[in-house]
Amino acid sequence: MIVAVNEIAKYPKIISDANEIIYVQDKRKNELKSIVIPASYESYLHDAIKEIEYQMWLKRNQGLLKSEHPEILENIVSDIGDKI
Image (cartoon, rainbow, N blue to C red; front, side, top):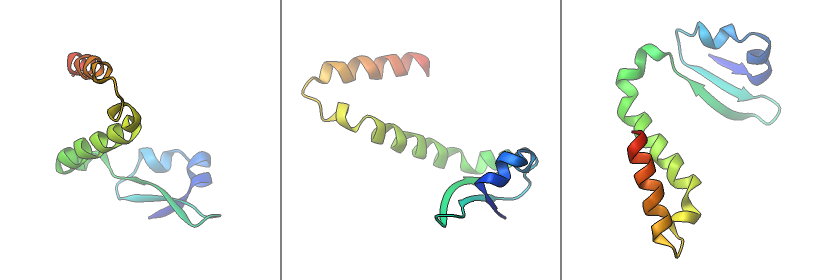
């Protein structure tokens, strides 16, 4: 099912009652914004979600990873390890 961003704003129940994959599209720009997959399929996607989260983390921290101060990265990684 393809829905527009404004449809979700008007009818948020579209997402909460999802029983099929929903493609959220910005119809003005004809651009796919998100894909909503029902939570009942989480077990199938567990590894993929972990990889996606890791790739997002790498993208957010790209500047830090290239930093000349590796001790900053070590502190952050240890903090993350404590939270996990």
